[in-house]
Length: 276
Image 1: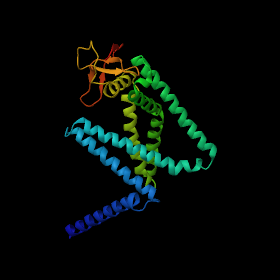
Image 2 (image 1 turned 120 degrees about the vertical axis):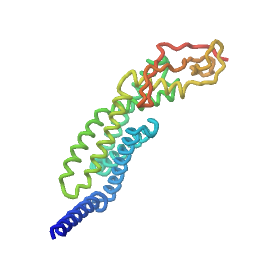
Image 3 (image 1 turned 60 degrees about the vertical axis):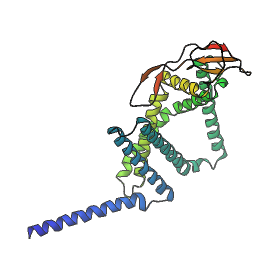
Image 4 (image 1 turned 30 degrees about the horizontal axis):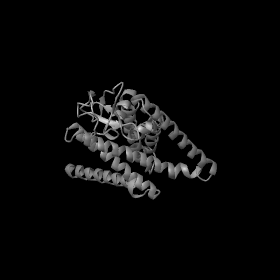
């Protein structure tokens, strides 16, 4: 008799857990307030799944670190997509009705881009001693890095706000926004960590810009007398391509096996040669 009662109690507990689990899933995915919330919920679920996948692959060393970095960059892109979508549907609609607000945001973006390009040109000049237009790929990359650096503190604010809002919504009925907020917080945490480690430190940022320049703006095929080491690369610094700036082979200062990013030595001066 006691055994039967225990089995019945266990069955009731299991049914209650099933009902609660089904209700939670419905609240999150089955009955959103709008299709907008539904899409963001699935994006959040994908983010958390990718994060768990990256953690598992990294813990057990199942794939190269470069593969895990691809997953992390995907998380950043999803986080930015979610943030822009929320701005568009929740915040922007209250501002875009007014022409003055539209002009303000356009002017703000233009000003941020202008400042970033100015800092990027200064950085290119400090590294190579030449005008930034001589190295278009490195200049574009440097401007992008400067824009990311400007987003450092806004990213911190978004992380804090997302986690606080997510925790608050967890304790409310039909809290379909909780998963969105928590996932966006985790995604922006990865984004902020990338900025802090790869963009903010001056030495690392200059190293990144120099590596991009060597790979994209310098040429491995050239006819310039006086260059013995064929591992050198040359960037032509005049319109008729008769003068070239020589970049020596990359010298790695430090390399973390847990990352594909290297810190290389940036030459203090670059040799200029005459080319045929």
